[in-house]
Length: 64
Image 1 (tube, rainbow, N blue to C red):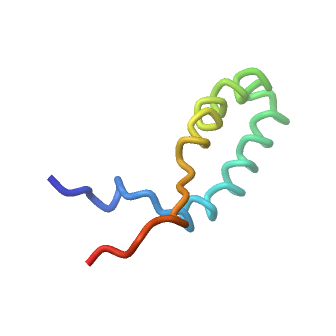
Image 2: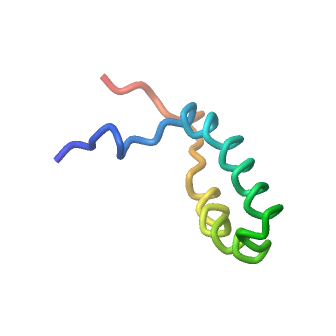
């Protein structure tokens, strides 16, 4: 079964989303909608996964 477009990670799209998400977090914190601890808990999951998402392709070779 192949992946759908929603399941494929697009680094450029994610990079474009990050500033907006950071602004939303800052607004939520400033308005007391969310506390620092809540934002840290929400974002901590992704921080722990970041090292796993890094790929070193320097030793890779072209297939085909």
